[in-house]
Length: 198
Length: 198
Image 1 (tube, rainbow over the protein chains, first blue to last red):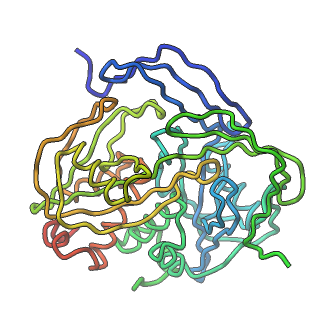
Image 2: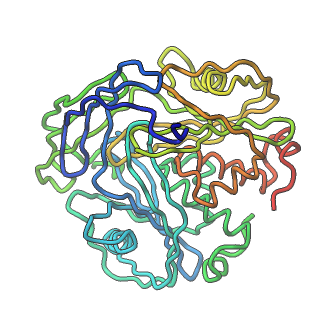
């Protein structure tokens, strides 16, 4: 008897419709769970999305502002990047934090893992909080035109609540850290630096 | 003088690489913000993602379990769907809630708006909380094979914290409602039904 969690879709054929260094688009000829013929176009992501909330000793964090080409809009986000197969997620996010902000951090804790858009895409993301920061020299990638903004973490929280931050990774990570602070389970150095929330 | 929030990318050419009723994939020949030639492949979503946390008089919510074809994995999520051009986001999510769970709700409040995967996609999502529920007959779409689970909202919160819910819309929405309850700004009927969180 089939387990109800088994894949109820039948794939008859699969054809790659588009491929570049970041994504691969495949159209599948399928039978739906009800055995009706149909198509399912999927987007495979070749990189893991990583993000980090850096918190300094004064309870300030760093947001990255950039024009998002795919969205056609400007977006304020936590520092984020794409992990490659040759590095762990933590190595990836440490590299991105350094490239975008010039920061390194001695303290790291994973916040949460997400699937970002699972109706069509398989993109996965991992978010961290980092503390015990040291400032160095940033070196953004050639394709990036970034604005870095240092602000109190509580102001980043207010931006999420006001709808001024809409990037799903950033919203989920900032909300998780706010919840950890309110529940009293945030890393002690982070809780001490941020102080009480309203 | 250009505003730093203007689009710093130059699009030289754009070619549709794939199109179906849900997505359109376009490859752009671009100059990056640093004026280097490159490509940018984007995925346009034709539907707005909508989601809802229904809360009944006993503080129970309803999660939907389904195998996500694009992800290749089973996923527990809040009731979600795709809005069409002929309906408002609220009409869309009310239709999806009814189709998937058989529920209608007299009370509705928007929780948050997200951009789900903005490095490549333009997919946007809107999440709601709904209360004052009435039970009817569900009628899932032909392509769906859904399992509906009624459970206390606080158990859905625990699933998010345990990493058992990873869908970005669901995580962001459940975290937002948890924060609203902890901050004392949730709708009174919802706060009364859920009661105190640990």
